[in-house]
Image 1 (cartoon, one colour):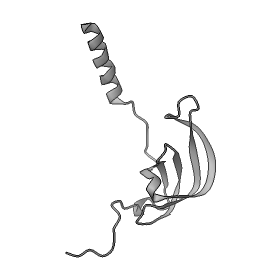
Image 2 (cartoon, rainbow, N blue to C red):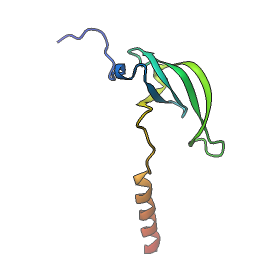
Image 3 (tube, helix red, strand yellow):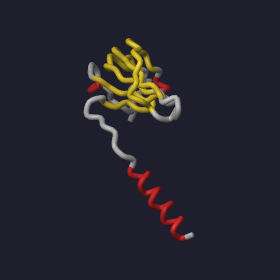
Image 4 (cartoon, rainbow, N blue to C red):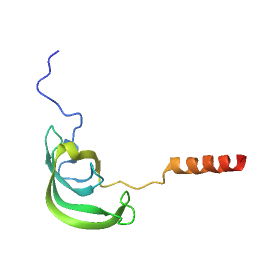
Length: 109
């Protein structure tokens, strides 16, 4: 079977003209309205805002934002694309298990 050209592993058509949150390589996170994309996962976002990181802990993203406007995200930097509606942060279930395990090890000593 021969395939015609390269096809992207993800289909972003259902997200066009809808809000998306994008995580980029290096830890940056942006949110905006997906206006277009290509097979290399280059994205065009309108009304984009960047979620700034905590100066004390660079791995933590805060609710503080800065407006970027129209944004082109290079596909090689895109790590995650998720709808911005229906998204909520949950507690890390592995963190509790790790704390329980460490507590059990200290009790053994």
